[in-house]
Length: 318
Image (tube, rainbow, N blue to C red):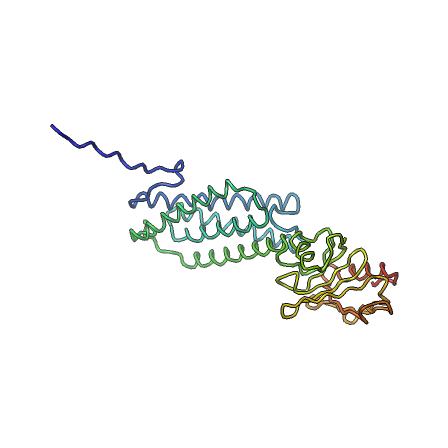
């Protein structure tokens, strides 16, 4: 008498339940539901950040607010992020799976931005969250195969989905902008003191020979919106430097302090326009004059010019 040995059942649980086999409707729903934990983790992260902002005045991965208005903007965005991510989590928990792509994209953007602002930190948690997100996204794709996006077949509140998507996009944009400003890829819109210049910008200035590695920078103002190389001016311990980039060509103008004869204000700045100053050279200067632009934000133009006036022993501006 002969017989065939029964084949063992395929093992469905993998990676401690974080990555399971999806081969039917039930396993697809189980996978799709898992991504709710990613949404709730995002809620937890923003809640902790909000606590740091309220307790210390600075969130963990955001630039310190420069004034009260910026503080309340950051606080409002964090509250909105908490509300939206919590809503997304409960939507998925109630088997409304149409919001899964929004959570998946949100997590990926968050991880990319965090890797830029704090390289190497939280890698293990990021890997776990990515695995869960991909597993949940696989479940969502499988449900499309079974033509069951929402098993409860309830009427979709499209206006809530659209509103949530818009708020999510705005939050991600602001977080991305803050991160790019914090690490220095995008320049600040104000005059900044030397100790606050991001390493990325310092390395760029040295790499393009705008400053020397040994220079001590006291003030920097970048005129551009997208790169520190678009143009700007800075004060070092021994000279004024102004630079600009036109059609890919970088031009650098330098005046040692002993070569400067006087400073003239050409145009008083406002919230929409920079102050314009004309820096005159003496008989020892390479340039007859240099025209520089300085932002009035937080009084940065006056701080810059008064430091320059101090260097050349000229009366300060008020």
